[in-house]
Image 1 (cartoon, helix red, strand yellow):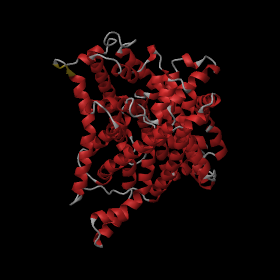
Image 2 (tube, one colour; image 1 turned 90 degrees about the vertical axis):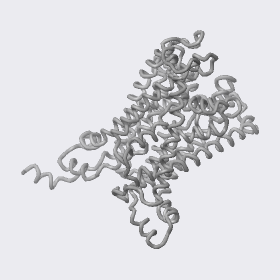
Image 3 (cartoon, helix red, strand yellow; image 1 turned 180 degrees about the horizontal axis):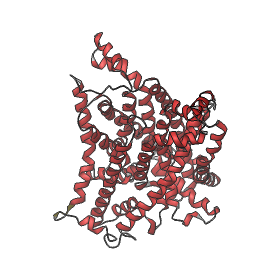
Image 4 (cartoon, one colour; image 1 turned 30 degrees about the vertical axis):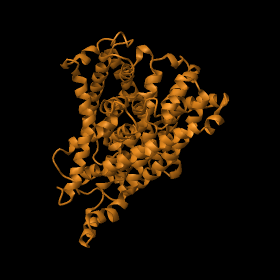
Length: 544
């Protein structure tokens, strides 16, 4: 009784002070500075020092690349948004059997390795081309739009739309005048992220574009690896970084508006069985889901197809090195390398991502200006949009200055993969931590808990499911990372996506069968992880 009486008069403790959070921010920012900013700045400086940047920027071919990059990204974004809107309606408004399976099917393409998607679409369009590139990029990103928009849509009260209908508005007019304006923050945020992913797409364009169609990302790879044109690669990297930062700022503004909208509107149970014309929208959503399965099913069938019919020849051949020794390690060894690197990258990303998410929430709850929080958030997202080739080449010319010369270390690939995974971990954890009821934290503080104990005892346990989901999500993303890994992995440390890329670039039917089989194995692991994520995720909270 005395304890509670004393607790009632004790002042409630504030969340961790902004200064302490800024100190903690040095951990992810330090990692970002050493393993991202330093290598990128080094490669850009070397390119600038060699001259020729002005020549590259003035060349018509350069701006043709920029135009094609932006055009295919814009087209892919439009296709993804149009395809995802019915799916978002289905996820947010419809109570039908099998919704958990629908969520999983929609998410699977987003976490598939780019080389898997590229090969799947090449099996449908052997000659590749612009249409194949646009559809493959849209295939990747339907999940981003569908899940981001449905998270906000589930918080919208149906009564406003029903009121418009009762006043004589058609279903389409009620959607355009009432629902669509409320969804614009989510659509804008998702579209900005999708545009970023499509503009920096590497594996898809490399496999489907060939020598005919190149984007900034593939051109940077070509100039760096094949032509050793560092000044040209540096110029293109400068253009790409500028565009990425601009898109990230737009996405941050849209994301803040969306989170504000979700805060102002508590989630209500608005899902019900479709009525009337809603069945048309639901049918369109199921058609999109079915379309997402076509490349996946075709990939599995191709992995089982042999010149003599159906068989497991490709899977058996993974224990070897391919047709006439095309590989220097077996497919099994590459799979082991993939699992090891992905596990290490996930552990690194979780440590950095949790720290960054806690810091961002602490700064939001303190008196730190929102502009500072947005700047830090944007800085942590930048690695998603910078060429993996630029980062990888930067590693090779800078990391020898660190103790142990990391350039020859097996840790190099996990470090590069962690750069990609960390922003995704932050995006999954941050909305969950921000949604925790502040009154729980205040109650713990009033009972004498220190600010960091409040985080340990309240925030982290409540976000535990999302933490596990982020770990599974990050693992499959790292497992399928192709851009930086294809540049950094040595012959004996090649991962499965790198091996797939090498197999499809060499002649021989056996190599093709092995590539399809390896892609199918990666896809099976991805599906298993997605099902785990769906089981663990906090409903309607988070961005993926």
